[in-house]
Amino acid sequence: MSNTNQIESKTFNAPSATNYVSQGEGAPVIMVHGLAASLHDWDFLLPELAKAGYAGYALDLLGHGESPKPESRAYQVGWLFDHFEQWLDSLELDSPAVLVGHSLGGYLVLEYARRFPARIRGLILADPFYSLSQLPAALRLTYRHPSLSGLVAGRTPEWLFRIIIDFTSAVMGHSSGALHALPEHIRAQTAQDYIRTAPGVYNIPNSGFDLAPYLDSISTPTLVVWGERDQTLAPSSFANLVNALPSARAEHIRAGHVPHQSHADWFNKLALDFLNTL
Image (cartoon, rainbow, N blue to C red; front, side, top):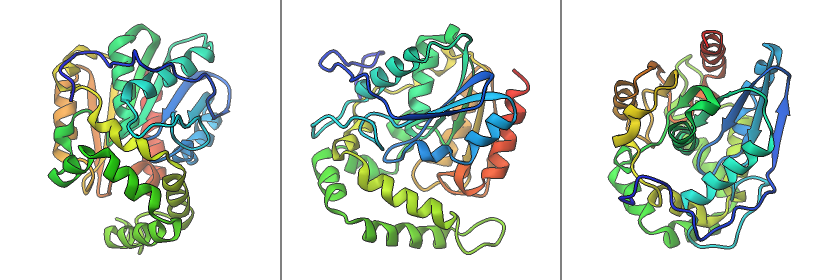
């Protein structure tokens, strides 16, 4: 990762177009998905926020879903941050927002909180990415070769990826005893999101800087939620994050990398309870 303490993005002007959805009225809550996902990550949470009197917003990050996909073999995290920041500015919110981020989305909202603390009033992080050290050695090696990972992603048909998702979902199982960790429609959406993602985004984890040394400067009230059986990011790293942040608390459950989808009722209640404390 870069040794600088700010995301570099000087070579790229983020396009203004952003695909997003919004629902409800009230204090703003902004939801940011992870790598190779989409705004549909928040299909369970968005209507619950609206019912509880919040204005929820969920976007497709640059290179994902229906948002712009610049032609590049190696996206930079600064491009996504610029795109996200410009979109957030365009909403012209009249009060500080709560930011919700999963995985890569967690990195983006942590960096936003670090740079613009006065613009937000809380963070909710689900299995957040903040350092390459969280990744298993095999994944770190893969992300160091974005052309290879992008080529594999670009040539994997949706039906094959769906088989992989179904298999891993069944292996993980659900803490309630259900066969699958993820509901069928979530598995279908995950496969579709993966295929729609620009191959160049797989360079993103290798293009940012390590946030670990700066976590103690982020004093925003924070809820960190994670799956104890996360196979993408080391579960121990989330406890380290909670200890590093000055105003954070932890909740975890027997789940994988996407507890906000596999255990949506549990996650939504935690999120709403946390919002009520702000």
